[in-house]
Amino acid sequence: MTVTCELKDSWKQFLELVEKKCSSTEFHNWFSPIKVIPKEGDILHLEVPNIFVQEYLIDNYREDLALFFPNLENGKLPIEFHVKLDKKTPKKQPPKLIKKTTTFLLNKNYTFENFIEGPSNQFVKSAAIGVAVHPGKSYNPLFIHGGVGLGKTHLLHGIGHSIKNGSKNIKIQCITTEGFINDLIDNLKSKSVDKMKRYYRSLDILLVDDIQFLQNRLNFEDEFCNTFESLINQHKQIVITSDKPPSQLNLSERMIARMEWGLVANVGIPDLETRVAIIQHKADQKALFIPNDIAFYIAEHIYLNVRQIEGAINRLCAFCRLMNLKITQDIVERVLAELIHKNPLIRVTIDGILKSVSNLFEVKASDIKGNSRMKNIALARQIAMYLAKELMDDSLQKIASSFGGKTHSTLLHSWKKITKEIKENEKLHRQIQIIKRNLKG
Ligand code: ADP
Ligand code: MG
Image (cartoon, rainbow, N blue to C red):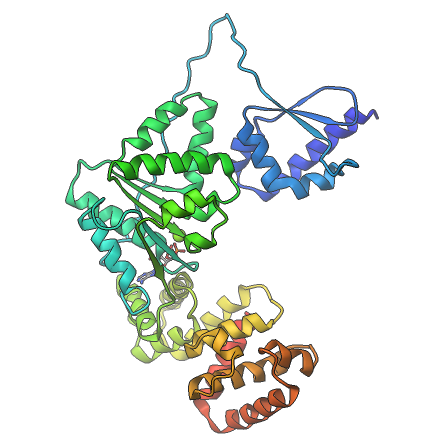
């Protein structure tokens, strides 16, 4: 086999791997247009429709590519890209497809009425309502950030619904960052980028979900930033969601500064009472009756993510309807156990323990590692140390030093104290069971 044939074969194998790894839309958009240019030599020549495709491939698949095409001595991949030239064909040209801009429908359940308020999300909800009442006038942009499944998309769509209900003529676009990028690619392909730019810049409201996906997409970032500035300059409202605050995103300083122009608000993990209210609300929507003590039981067991709480309610509902059973603690335990079982086993780490303990006891992880003697912090610290000794294989010395450099006798003291207390204190016993289950889940 010639070198070129081998390279072509490797490319085919690479594509087979990629097809398994990514969605069919992604594959269609990014990989299908790439063509191998038959050339002799030990370098693979690829024809790409534009620079974005080349960048995308290198940014996202460098490691996979290196498996199939080992780096050259200079550390570069043995691949040369050729951007396809726009040849003028004198013959009949197929009609240009003007790509319609992707519009994302608002989820009908994601309204402000369905968003349960508590101390962790009160501020961000009021900010969202403020924006919906006076778009472009209160906070611009509004930047909402927080962990997975805590209601960012829900609030974004809530703003969309509320504005739409207020005025039918407002031009509003709700889009995921991936959607924006795919739009741009499609329009690049059909050479209708200017039309797309004009469309975005004519909007009254732009709602953008999950801006973190703009990270490491340099060319798209520029285009997004231009659209952003053009809208803000016309006092058009922009709302952005993200899994991190602007300063922690790997984006250009220009982009970060723009996102910090308006109001940055955080959606936190709802506290126990709010979680119970969410559970009751979701159960009501399904006409399912959940006794209060059971709602508490669920809220105590699933506490990091509202989407998981919803998942549990859906399962519980399906199970009870199917089996024609009333909800009891026994059933909840069975259904939840199944849910937890489905998660892959993970290795227990100090960070994991700190996160779970700090969430359940509502103290900061940094305080657990610190030296504060405040009662709730000291207890959380002792529990974290007890769990680390019970669940981790590392030496006592190593575990103790991970807690901000404590000694191994402090660790042993905590472990003994908690071991004794668990036997006498039912509530503590249950709390520790919850953490253990979550850590191993
Ligand atoms: P994120 O975008 O932050 O990952 P979502 O907005 O998709 O999270 O929320 C996940 C699910 O949890 C959605 O079904 C949403 O309705 C629900 N949810 C989150 N927070 C709340 C809340 N405070 N009240 C009611 N439902 C909520
Ligand atoms: Mg979301």
